[in-house]
Length: 236
Image (tube, rainbow, N blue to C red; front, side):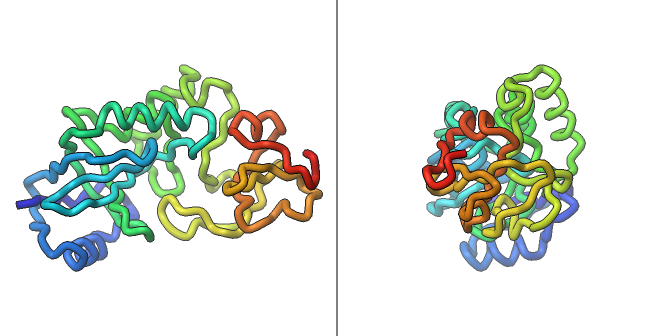
């Protein structure tokens, strides 16, 4: 029997939608306000996404309230390696709060009594995803990491992979952890990076606002540090 706990810690959670989607997809989860859901992690995609096996079904989990660096970006490999070393092959305690547009279960993750969401942020392996979380514990963890200048804060000027409300002047996210296809104009932004080609463009380039050019960099060095290369068309 699989037990699922629905969290009341998120102010945006649609608990009814969570129940309907999970029950309709798997038809086997028993909802209990007391027991925890303890599946085994069978794979780790990146720092904030992994898969579990539950009653013979593989479910993808998106760690709530955190945003790890994307592939090829500064600290991305470290974040993935850390999550893999801590979770792979182990039973985790999951407290779901939502389901995103890709049917990933967005959840709090607890391993051996440790809040893994907070741990990732405190070690500088992720930013607090303030677009979807105002959790004070995660906010505090980010303040600690930033003050210690560890991980993503080690260079002192790292920007989150997502766009926060303070950074964005136009545009919105379409779902949890999913960026809009429309490039967002950010106050002070100089370069836009193409997340598919890993090339970045200057603001005068005709490809500056291309479909996949949603990575925002405030300097040439920042783009290069994140694993992007100058586009040949505009030679930024």
